[in-house]
Length: 460
Ligand code: FCB
Image (cartoon, rainbow, N blue to C red; front, side):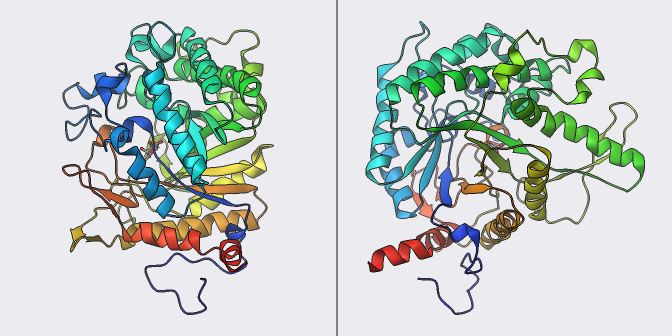
């Protein structure tokens, strides 16, 4: 029940008239295949398996061989999701688990996901399926990965088979999760798999990723016309360190490279004007018709938000990221800046003609302490509180936002950071594989379970 009393510290609360309490607003939790599944021997090798073997690539020298062992514990994990009372679960399909190298489906892999889809539906939890959350089959990387245009067509083929196999069980598809990370972190600065480093690679890989998205949208509109189909992008508002015109220009430039480079072609079929300024060797190879494919109409755009970035001018690159002192930080060293989420959403709304928005990821890594069988993660709770209010504020100012997903359901393999950084609202003991709901998880559960339309339904 929504109580009239002063909320205690351990609750999430929004005003009674908040649009977040509308029956049409979806609340969910999110994960990704490589970060939780394990069972690596039952699928093809992927680029993260290979990258984890590079000395120093992963902070704690870990890998995804076992992860949260979700492959074996999926039934209890769905029970856990159901116990949180959420409307939806966002998870990703491991391409190397459902496809064989000969281009045919791996039936065992498909069965794994069909079981999950069917159980979610039986529990009245909407499946939000991400088709690519960074785990490219290694054999495709061996042929050039996302630098090879053919990978986009391989993706289309995979999406074609998988979406036919899933039939009408999927509520929403995202083609890609955060193509910026795949392209820039993976191929330009090499801190993510496959670990390539060249200023010439980032935008070429990005183009093939965006093309893959567009091709997949064609397939989805044929095979799965009734699901909501779109993409998930990450954004960090780019702020300038000072008001001096050069710093302002630097921040704008970073924004073009990191944020607008992805959303603009998807919505407007054009790269930002910056494309005319970058060196020829950095430019993507754009063939006739590519931009129309990329700009396929979408049912929604997923927005992932964690923090903002601050920039100053730099003679060589035009911009340079600044680490300011004395700012509130998460365990990732990312600034806690909830107003950046409102700003971002308003900005997107004012700049582009967008379909509805879902916040597909938001959350925080915090240095959790397991004391007396409890994790009292007040800092994470307060992160959720302020960011939910940031979404509330954006909706009140006219942005069409339809849902919010907490990253993450449970602690998991945080890419180059390994298992040390914990983003879960549920704690995972990696020895025993025990899951323990944190204070933030209980608060999220109480918040979503006590929304007025659910309370009323129970009364009726
Ligand atoms: C996002 C990723 C997600 C998770 C969070 C913390 O960039 O999509 O898998 O690692 O960051």
